[in-house]
Image (tube, rainbow, N blue to C red; front, side, top):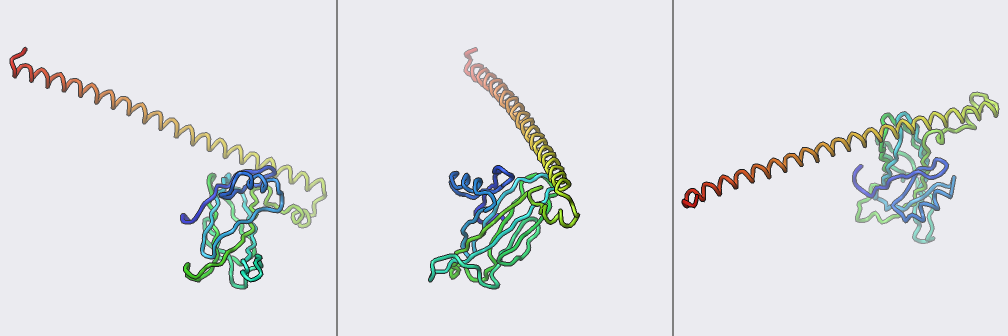
Length: 228
């Protein structure tokens, strides 16, 4: 999961959290695009990784769809049968050319999501280019509320209340995560300051010992030369 390019996923308005190693203008365009999500191009044997900052006990859903570049028609077409994607989160799993993956975070922090095709061709002969459409939804944005309303037979008011409760719960998780990050930063800062203090004390002690040694050495030298 460490090889291949990686991209840190940022937060966009409306709960969209995603980014690619692209210029900032493209990132802003993706954030404004809304529900259309994003797509990126990878080689047939290339791996692309994303980093998503997620609070604990938060559900994440990723929807993807792959297309293969057709050299004759010079357009991206649906992938041929058998060519799918390999998705790595915490556990690796093989998926088809189109589908979704779901996981729930158990610890807060960065979660790396990697995707690459299941092509078995050697890198020398694997010259195909893939277009992968990816949509990552985190927290309450991953809930399918029409399906929940139909399953639980909720009225419009009850569904809206359910959405508000989920939003409040997600906000609380985000606040807990920010407090967790603040605590980690505070501990790191205290550790760094303590190390700087001890290093300053060590430098001072070394300078004092060096000065004492030089004074004794010079005194012995002058006594040997009978100058003192």
